[in-house]
Length: 271
Image 1 (tube, rainbow, N blue to C red):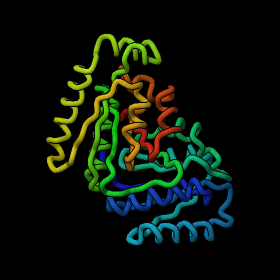
Image 2: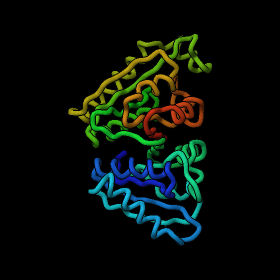
Image 3: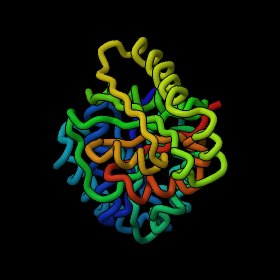
């Protein structure tokens, strides 16, 4: 996985403006192109709208010249077509007009299930300080491995530290049978082993990347949200195992998307 461009869905709403600011700053920090995509029934009024988008980009990322594109279709379908394994797709959590779907349920579910690249959901304003870490959930699954690879690449690209989190809920905190099985059979020793093995590969790829780790006996979503309280981005896999099982459309992903104090990147499996 290698980020070659940043694509952001935009409709002029407050939520979309937050997403556009984050996408523009990220494109500048990664030294990649920015593509601003608007879904509309007609092209009427889009010239004026994109003038506003371009001005907003200039305010937060003066070194970025955005490409603006109008596409016909449902926003989720449009952005899915714009995605690729080299594109970072960014959306807000509220929208209007043809981007009404950019509320937490439909866009995160629709895009995270079918896009070949990572999707970032930006909720409200967000910081992009270089010292703020990129946090990622690790559970040993293939999807979590890909999420960690993306998180490491992003952190290295923007000059941020990386923090990997593994959780094993204690038996009385387990929310579902698989969590309970993990708590009883795996335990902290297994979680620590997963982290050590996963991060050894990251260190070999990015020897200058500052890496931290966190082991938690809390419920996985709570562990991730807590670890991300000072983060600039929280990265999760769309599927998991053990403590992070059900990350696609289950309770963990919904909890993280609704309660994370920073933008959330959802990484789905890439065959």
